Length: 331
Ligand SMILES: Cc1cc2nc3c(=O)[nH]c(=O)nc-3n(C[C@H](O)[C@H](O)[C@H](O)COP(=O)(O)OP(=O)(O)OC[C@H]3O[C@@H](n4cnc5c(N)ncnc54)[C@H](O)[C@@H]3O)c2cc1C
Ligand code: FES
Image (cartoon, rainbow, N blue to C red; front, top):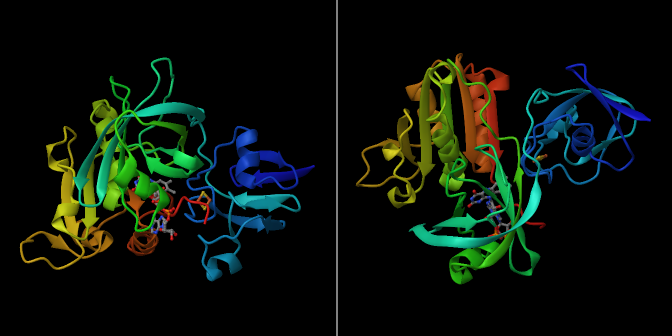
């Protein structure tokens, strides 16, 4: 039997053709993941000994990372016993992912290219999730796409999605041209490990681009209910967009206590706020990152660039968490 050992001391068996991530899940060991298709690099880990084999292309890794022994556990299997350097999410138990029917309760355009959708589950559904997680929507013709949940669990049990239109996108066409109240869809979830770790006493920083603000909003809603001794020392949200109309949420009206910095990436005559990349604006406003934890969500480019520059500026390597909105289709 082939064995995977982790730097934490845990180990679990793996059978031929199974990904390391799936083998871990079968052994109830929770490893970080998001897209599960080798694109987002959330599941990146380092092979310290043994040999592995890629089952699908590892698009989320650079050539240098591959040479340095990094792999993506969601698309790799083991050929021999291996030792992996990876932080398992020890002690965390995620709600089980299931498939549910759901209906569109409300659909509303919030910005030229953003739709807000509320989904209603059957009254008997015991759907539970942790703010920051996402679901897969299975739409017309079986198209399956991932969307972050934009609200923390609510009395109404409605699930909020914030959906950006992607040019020529199959599911975008559905949301922006066909979807209507009461449409029947299916969802699978909750999924992913983008969730707040212990934030007590930490300088908590959120970086978001576009609809990457969706899981951040859910996390902020949940933070408002944390007891005083579990609260972060400070919380700051930097939200990046191209046009002022892209800031489709009134974040400053939320109940949680945080500083909000909207950041525009393009010059605009009317704009007197911050401009540039969210990570650069963060470094300008919060130069000392030693006590910080950063949660970044949105474009792949922002996440990779932010991780590089923030770690170089002193952010502890194990305090950068991300969820990249990579293409979730099968192409
Ligand atoms: C974990 C996760 C969570 C996500 N959460 C959200 C969310 O909350 N809100 C949201 O708006 N989106 C989110 N996405 C992205 C979403 O799942 C879809 O990929 C996206 O909406 C495009 O789907 P589509 O069917 O319209 O386009 P497709 O038919 O899949 O693609 C059309 C074309 O656009 C390209 N493309 C697809 N997706 C992207 C992208 N993200 N960036 C650039 N090019 C792309 C494709 O390569 C293709 O050429 C998330 C993705 C992941 C992996
Ligand atoms: S690359 Fe493995 S979970 Fe995204």
